[in-house]
Length: 231
Image 1 (cartoon, helix red, strand yellow):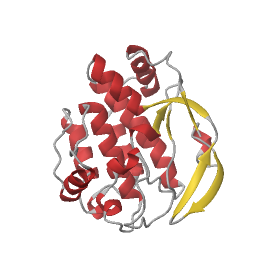
Image 2: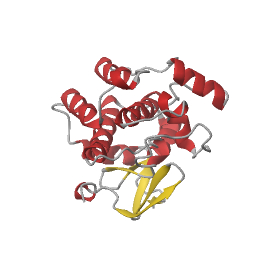
Image 3: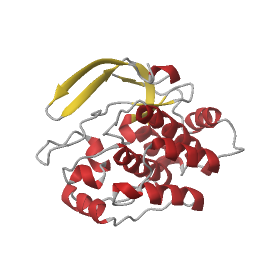
Image 4: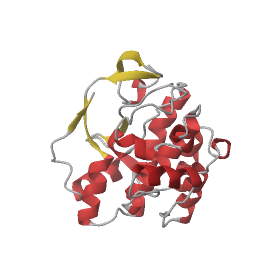
């Protein structure tokens, strides 16, 4: 109920798979952030207000998960979805595994956005989501993965050691992302609630974020594209 109150996907089924507790959600037509990134690579980088609107709405959605004591565990551009109304939803997720075994299989695109503690097979909490969310939004802005490596092993090494290449062009946003991308989880925001508060402060006085996001979809030619159905 805490998740459905704000136009977020409603879990229809919950089941265990190995160490993970998985959720299945009701269908919701949407455009993933990965499509925004691809369109922006062809048409030009997003404006500052567009990046901030996506960051703020995404952080507010993730904050609802954390307020409900649910850790998503799989934040990545493919799993952050934009509805025609301009809301941002979170699809997928392992939800409360708290410990991902080292020998666990790659779960898809989200493996490239895992926090160091997930890569190392350590216990993780909400700060791991903050790390993955910051990676995702930095890629939305810079159009490149902040820790990209030529191989999965090289990428994991860069993440573990904090060898980041991309930075936000906006100093206030860079401070938020830098904190969220700290190697030790204790140095990151304790949850997306703090992320959302910081981003609201940066965005004070900006246009209604959903209006900005709807304009972004139209500008990138994504409003009339076939929409993904999240499930």
